[in-house]
Length: 289
Image (cartoon, rainbow, N blue to C red; front, side, top):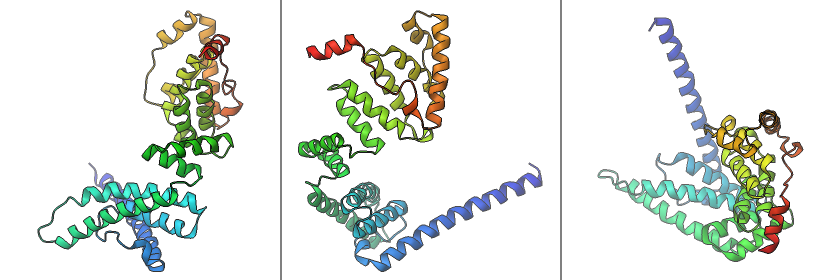
């Protein structure tokens, strides 16, 4: 390697290292500010270098809970999620044994036990809360049926906008009501940028479309899967659905390109394949159930 290339590599390494160091300093200074302003929010947290990101996120969410940002209920949901991540990290680190640093070992163990108690405390406080995020939390963590009922009721009143919560509901309705499941899934996709889109959502749209008898939507959505993920598809099997008709194949390829363009511009709702179109045969089967 030439001297010039070595210098270039060292320069890049310097800037990357410096950037990471500054990010760490920014996090630490913000965490320290909160701990100085509200010491009780940082009480019972470990003090060594393990789990820095998890501790930082937890301190940030605790401050928002303390201030009720955006609301007390919503802030507590985010604190619970941050607490779970902190619990997982510090729980593993608390198992590390020290010969020379027993205090650190004890400190991490105490932090682990303290976060378990804090999670229980927040769960007890929020058990009957009507906030959809907290209802979602209590159902998914504790199979609280009343929480699920509140969550479903919130969706009926159009109080759920978060794409991931819509996807969760879509899974809940998948067997109970495929059309509603598909509608919720498409609503989630419409609210998500392509770079953040989970390819499984598109796959499930394709499969649900096939289930309700919408072959066109099934084919078009399936065709874009290789373009938004590393997964491959069996086009031969896919086009067997339309008996390998050349004109139809060309039509679907163009339709797939348009669909992909709509996802890139976050205009999925305006595409020809956003509306759920169940076949009459499927509707008849549903009525007989």
